[in-house]
Image (cartoon, rainbow, N blue to C red; front, side, top):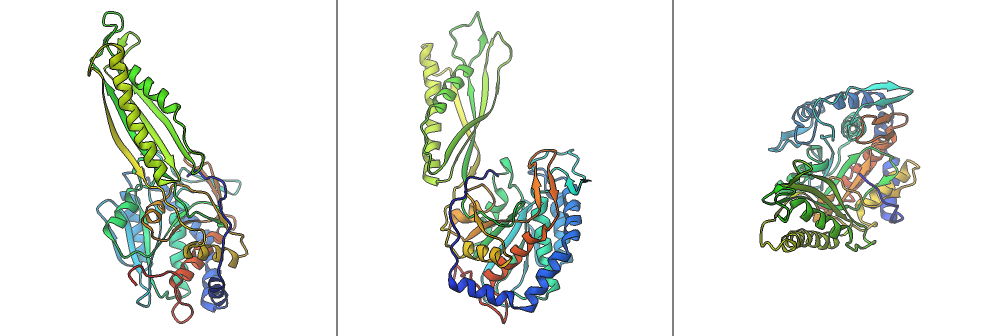
Length: 423
């Protein structure tokens, strides 16, 4: 995740404030919050257990099976593992309420064989993936334990689980499949590591292309004058680097990987680059994509024309990533509820700039969604020195609990703030 500046101030209506005044006065809610404070060490141990199970993107099966077992032990109903590996079950509400998803992602950026066993040093826990998203996975389980321990029955259904393919070239495939297979989800919360004050309600979109130039190749001296795939790719990179892009919404491009060629005295037969383009606006993202695709074709044509050839150089573009951008009002009910949950814990809410998380998909689809953060100090994300400090981390899960209760309502206490999509 890459975060921009804080974008908006939170706005909380009187009606939302009234709900939280009622919730905080309830003994069951108080019991749930107290349980989470006492559960902090257990949650940390569970986080370490989950992190130790390898889960590279596209190979999350073993961790998913373990997570399914954890949900079964918490008496979650109707647990399934879908065709791509998502794990979800339901904690039923009292009936006729909205359906809210809360989930974290199973996958990590680390390849198979990476040592993910935790090491404790100076109060911190070091392990690749211990925070991203070990913290999210453990937080969802801790939240579920608190609901059970306090015997809280929500009015709406809580759909609890974990997705695959959130990282990198996983391309949000897990959450995409979730929304392709269901049309009854009224709200969505994804859980990531970080400060509980943060609320992410905007999604940065991205598109990624693997672009391959091909040509006849030849000897650098004997066949000089033969169009070169590497020259064509160089032309394309130069043109891309000169594109004028908007500053608002933030829009970016990057050629992240280039490869190809055989030797210093060989005209390459093939070369490749992988390009990443991003924007906080879907329209701007699509416009940049069109420019990119136009540029790579023009570069091949110019290389052929330079050497008076018609079609020696060809180019193929394969899309390897497609994450839509998503916009949502800062006064939407799910943002207000998340902010009110922060204030209930005497934490000042912070509405962050756009990032790319599982929440991108529901936000793009117009379904209320936020990414919230599991608490605890953490850093070194996506490195072998990733760490997590569990000191007072329970505040993150307490905020999750209060947000869920506000959105789904509590039987006999409060009505749901979240609206059913199908009325």
